[in-house]
Length: 396
Image: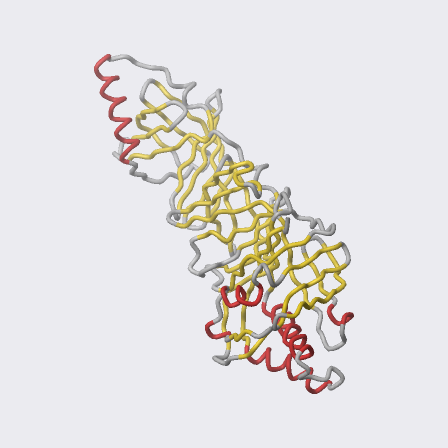
């Protein structure tokens, strides 16, 4: 078992009060039943989950400095306010303790060190399974969209900006293990731990989960792993942009000016406002509807769906267009739709829109292969990297 010194002033005050009362009454209590259960301690670089059974047997899971351990067996013996913990890895403890049943217990080693464990009431190992999207997190990347899927086999996939990688990653696989309300998750061969909170139907959009590690917090919304594309229509709501790097050069799309060097989500608000831009989905096609210079315009594109991966077969609409592969996510009630595009997908998507704009303005001949290729080449030259997530809300 591994342990960490924790200093929680509020809890310590309660324990002090308990000590005074015990000393005054001089009563020796049997806490062997009170200590049964799952207990956790967690900080930014250390975590442990300790499961104590009624027969005094125990098992420890934890991580310290990126090193993970699990199923370390041992025993816990309490005698009044004295406690002895022995574990098969020889990380043992002898001392005394105070407990607030159902809340926390504090261990005092003979050396004078103190450790505090919080009582864990809920097992969230099943609740975490599924797909989650986060736009509300304390990442260093502003407006970072994160997508994570947890599978029953202990594997997870992650899409979004990864601080330890220093870059945007797409569907990166890792291992995880949820014990009680702590998620031990592998990142680049090292483990970290997250304190989980789960709220079933926490919003009108569905279940909410929060992950906390030190000062870093992420809020996640459960989304579906399989899309419902049955004649639903969505209006543009907002856009999230991360990892945008490129030329300081202006270019025009649908009558609006863009510049990758200083692009922001609000740039798309101008051209994709809910009254101007919406999408209509079906199992085999997607229809874009928008306005250019006050004129209504639309185009249909066949799509291929594989889970949450959606391929827009734009070249079948017009050979001048290029195929766009994106990822789509819907919440539990189909009230939100997220379209996530990595760099290559976004380049093709926005270059397709530029060609569409040029066609409507009569400024390009789609039979001129060189002119069409130049549009895509110019867009590739402008955009070194970018990740874009468009958020749509269902139209009533």
